[in-house]
Length: 279
Image 1 (cartoon, rainbow, N blue to C red):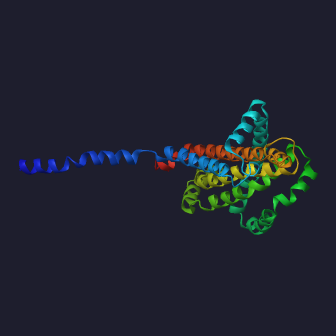
Image 2: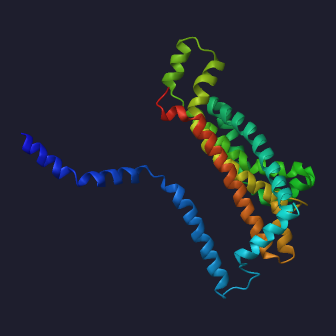
Image 3: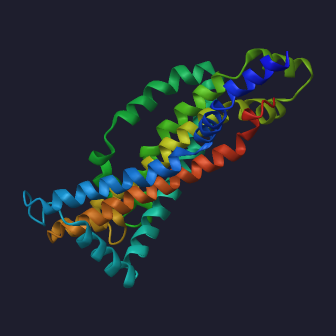
């Protein structure tokens, strides 16, 4: 019996290091390595394209030229001003759109008559190209902050409304009836059942809306503005300064990515109870 055990141990011992190695490979967060690697590859691809000689510098600027523009505008503080302006417009529009969209979405999801009456007109509003009516919005609300906030809200409200409708309609009817049977008030059902149940869909809509809010702010700045990243794009285009245009586009992308990441972190912290299997 002991000889068999020894033989089995001897046969298993060479595989032990492999098992440990595979175990650690599974535990490694490959995203930590892949994310900067992909970014480095994109940077090198851009650099090679700029140095290939197929395109002039005013068409495909070299990364070092764009970096020089960034350092210049960082030194004089203008890039911070432009980012802050776009961020304020985007977040203000997102806040207003979220309030309106969640209220409308809840009413449509819970009251069938409002679903029948409002949904066609809301879809009609969503189908209107915002870029086409942006000049009118500038005329109505002026060329200041208000018009940019309205445009950002017009672009972001629809995903939030749809997410709210889907989330509320996916609430379990059995759980709703059980709470009613236990004499729960409408406020208690809303707070303790509907909101927690709809949170995944709400965060899904918020992730889409937060990136669209930056797009909306930039669209408003394209039409009329004196500050903001959208204004910087139009300014660079007007003087044929392609590095400035590329810098502004990259900063818009960076702002969207940061906002999306913040929403993802908030989602992970608030919905951690779902992973833990809590009710």
